[in-house]
Image (cartoon, rainbow, N blue to C red; front, side, top):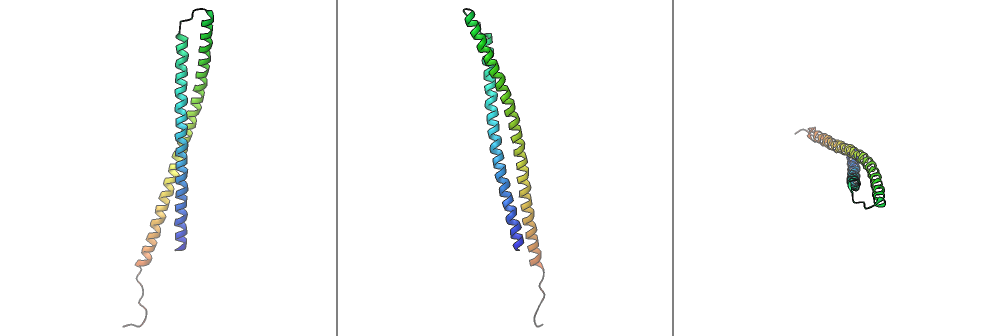
Length: 140
């Protein structure tokens, strides 16, 4: 019985550890998705600003035109940088989601293992108690 208690206690501990892993993986996946979304939005806004400045035709002289061209070039470069960062964030988010899926599978296996162990212990106890006892003592 003691070994059964020990095995069950260990199975529960493993299940709690897997549950904590799953919660941590979910938190990291959520954080990575939030970063990815912010970077993609930043990239889109920067590209639209660059296009807006490229289409602007309100330059009064060459200095205004040159300033607008420089600003547009800087905005395009910022847009490309933001796009690269968004791509890296997308890959990171995908990796975190894969980690989350793996953690959920490990948690599920730990839960199933604990349930099977519990069932087998109950079955063993049921068989032990259902065994008829021999009659001892003087025959009446």
